Length: 180
Image (cartoon, rainbow, N blue to C red; front, side, top):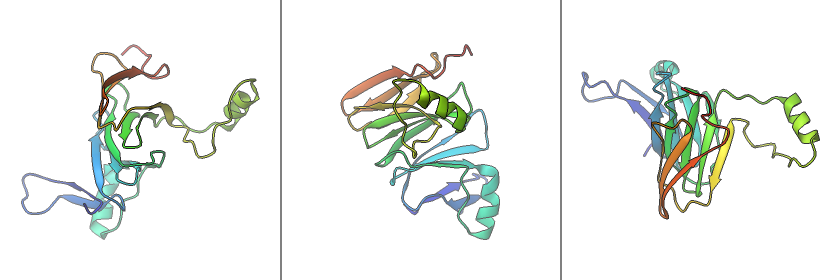
């Protein structure tokens, strides 16, 4: 409830091994990257999705300062309710939010001005908002209050969600097409 992320060592009692201020609001969810074991993602009440390099937590905890995030996405307009790293790609993460959306992110993507200009020159393409992160690969809207999102363990790119309006399964056309 204080915006901190704590990492505990069960061999020591009474205090966390690392504790850093991660968000200005409550941290609701976090997910440890199984492919890149020093990467952690957190989601908070303010809708922020942040990516952390745990190797920098030690210095921040020692100096009693806020840790520096690797990435900060403020696309969600309500609390983040679930996040999960993809099992098939160490740079891909899915998020769910009380804003009735679930998103798929690819952290390996960077903005390419030349490619964007070529896409905008093609007839029929809509102009993307300037504040739209290039890492945002897919947005699924219309779910009623999604609570959880998980990656399907056999079909790369397929996501499963629980929401107030039921269970949902979807696969973005641009995610998980490689054979693992």
